[in-house]
Image 1 (cartoon, rainbow, N blue to C red):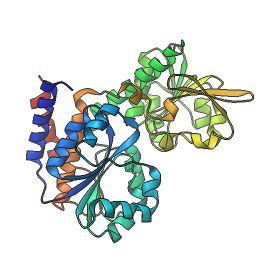
Image 2: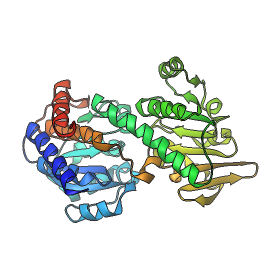
Image 3: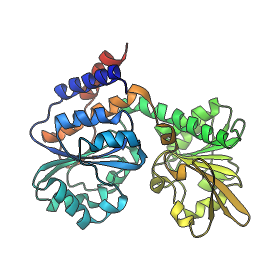
Image 4: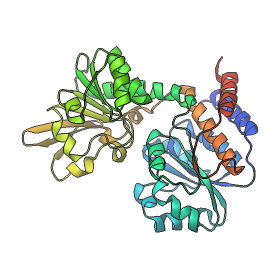
Length: 373
């Protein structure tokens, strides 16, 4: 990032942290993508809290950014297994921030399996969680009774801009990887699994790029919405993917399980918008299918009589090209900062919450002052 952009971004975040100051000393444990713009967000988090550790999402790490972040903060390895085991999770949080007031900043519901143990047995206080994604929102909602406040920004209107551009970046990266193999997607049959905000953006972008798009969502209301927008819809996953030459998975909640892959047509391209373990049950295929690299970020899965291609090892395909969505990403980051400060003030009771519209409007005004020029 060049100096003028860094200065403007730091000034934006300074305004945000002044608008939403912390209520006292707190420590944050931050799960995040480590892309080129992320150090500015971490510097802002360091203004609001003591950054106890940064845990980068494994498949979205820019090496140069990692080196910058490692020079300023403790960086630890992240895995689902770390927080799936409550004892191991508690030991980690104790070692990292024992006895302190802690806010857990999450992308994808990593802390959800061990949250009850952390709140009950941690030597400090877990003030709450800030969750960034729809996938994570669903994981926390599935817990039912939450032992502490969880503030989700996943469904914030401030994220709509990002989600729209993420959909476009998904299609861009998918097209680029397919073209690198000497193939094109134009006029093909495509399927989008999941018709949330990102799924809608993907479906519309595919249609604008002259693909024939079928949509499937487990929610019949969303299928009606897709139908009303002119997309073909189906009542099952298998029917949706049967004729698709491209399948894009945007559910955040295992779009394809082991038995679903058999329905893919031969030669289909398969891509995801989020982590492979959250969207695709690929590990269940490793003993059944032969996996053959056939190009950069492209793997052929093959057994006798059936084959298909997986892009980016099933991870978020747009991260291959940096997942750039411009300055709109900072709207969501600002809301995460505001939510962290709100938790430090004890503004929320245990349960699933969103930020007040007045706070979102304040963030939008600050963003317009800095970036609408």
